[in-house]
Length: 393
Ligand code: PLP
Image 1 (cartoon, rainbow, N blue to C red):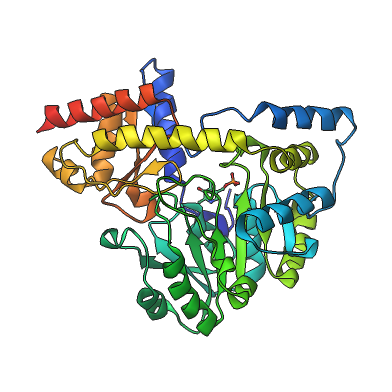
Image 2 (cartoon, protein in one colour):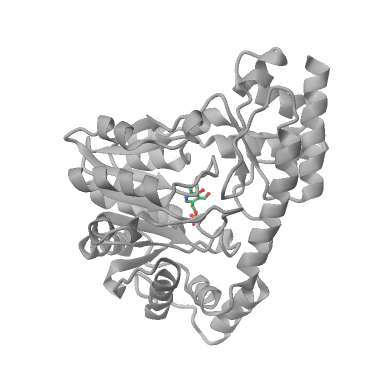
């Protein structure tokens, strides 16, 4: 069957591709270690699951308002006040079916054909595809490794044309784990204000920050920046709730109203019981969030030191999220491969370790390892990578 142009232009997700290949090998009986996961390996905290069950028993199994339950919007507003000292009205909040869906809906309502969106590389795989689905044009700006994969105000300025509508900032970043400092955000913000750009601030990894690093939202930095920014966040990564599909967008009320109209004709509302679970996630103590963060940080510290010992690997230590994004170009060459993609494929076939090649994130010299898996598995994976390199050199 002939499909619409808009879907034939979609690039399949490299993360899902490698996961599928790893699953195929697993099904053949191989002991595969997958470090491709984009989700916490912990179960959702018990009190959140209890709240969902209680919601079902209480009959909250029906449609809800499209933009989310009033109580949930209130909790999101309190969270933003508590964590970011930002104040919003309920009309400035929409609850969606995950942060991914919030982003999708946002691009649908702000982009006309040919409008450009500046996407710093390395980027999360869905940004360019979502922009294209809204008939927009992704414009990539390289976050150079020597600048911790971050873009500079000069680079941003140089990429702006009369068609530029928005810029995406994802801090902490997937895949690099880097965080923009307050000063860096201020400098980028000045350019955005000057050119009246919508700032899409994806803060989904906000709660996963390590060492001295601190998460700041660009919306906090001035009233002008707050007006231009749409904050995207959710509970998938912070509360280990990826399967519940609750995320949200917060920003200008006209834009949120348009997003709500669109959602009313596409999803009607996010799942009612997942919304009740999210109310509990925000209302009750955040101990579980902190416990998970500590577990990620301790894994990071252990495996980072081991990773940089592997021949041909160099890696900037991540400040947040749960990914390492080493440069493996030299490792590929040492092992006799022309590209990191080929090296990654051979590693999976020969040593049964699944990493995600950086090419899918716009950074072909790197690979992404997720440490959202047990320390035992992580250490075993690193031993196998080490053995693979020794065998090949
Ligand atoms: N933004 C980034 C940078 C992500 O890595 C992810 C998930 O992998 C999302 C958004 C989507 O999160 P959600 O599960 O809330 O849709």
